[in-house]
Amino acid sequence: MSGVTVKDIQERFDLELLAGASGIDRTVEISDISRPGLEMAGYFDFYTRTRIQLLGKTEISFFEMLPEALRIERMNLLCTPDTPAFVLAHGVALPPELEAAAERMGITVLGADVPTTRLSGMLTNFIAGRLAPMKTLHGVLVDVYGIGVLITGKSGVGKSETALELVKRGHRLIADDSVEIREVAKNILIGSPPPLLRHMLEIRGVGIIDIMTLFGASSVKDDKRIVLAIDLELWDPEKMYDRLGVDEDKLKIMDSEVTKLVVPVRPGRNLSVIIEVAAMDYRLKTLGINAAEEFTNKLDAVISQKAAAAEEKGIH
Image (cartoon, rainbow, N blue to C red; front, top):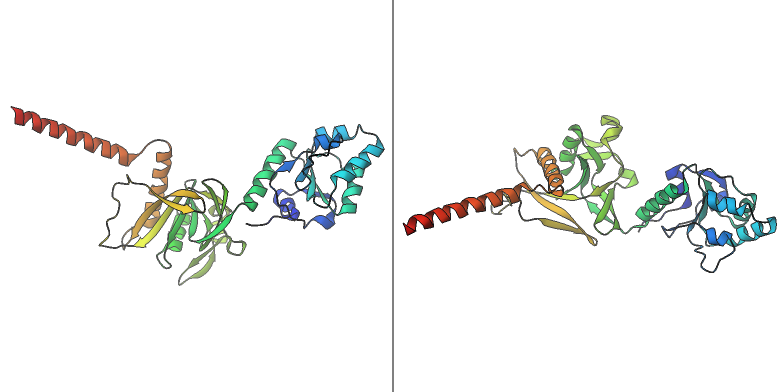
């Protein structure tokens, strides 16, 4: 599980630091966001103090109606040692009572011009993604026609070279060699590169190359949902490979599963084109168009017709 700090949140959304700079390195351990409306009214029995506290126009306008003594009291109660940070949405002004309490307790207060509901969703999604269970896999992750394709296989089979060809054909690289995969929800896996390897690709005989510098910003992406896994393996003449695509295999990553294809590698096979077609075919299947099933149904119909014709001929 990867951690997230208040500083990470500030940098990710370019939030303004309003007060409490000393608490910028506090960790956030819960992705849920609290809007302390009831607490502003004085009800603290179920105050979720360990969450980020989000204040918008509703909370602040009510707060400003309170007498000065109550305003000071409420902010002192809101600012606890367990509170990671406050975020003011909609560009609302920082109340001096909150500033004083936050500075005293070392709690960072951030500001944004984003509407409160939208900001709440943005914060929740970001923190949940960073706190999600994580696993690192050896492979390459590319965005092919909007489909997150995880390419796996033994070292030296040609994963990075295939990714380079895909980038040259207009697709995007997410991660090479090491892919950090976070399970943000059941069957929702988000892959990203380690910070040190971001935008980098290793080609044997050439070395490490910077894909963004060579091919531009449109050739890379920071993360992508993984929906298709393609395992490259050296061609085995003794093995029977799937030629119809009717049976669907799965790759299990943590508690989630993604569709898996095994593609044999041998001289003369254009792996980048094969992966492009696999991605397009996967998209068609999600739209209800399955070429393998249609072919099988047509074949069964032809066989049934011939069997019926032969039976009728035998009767006569």
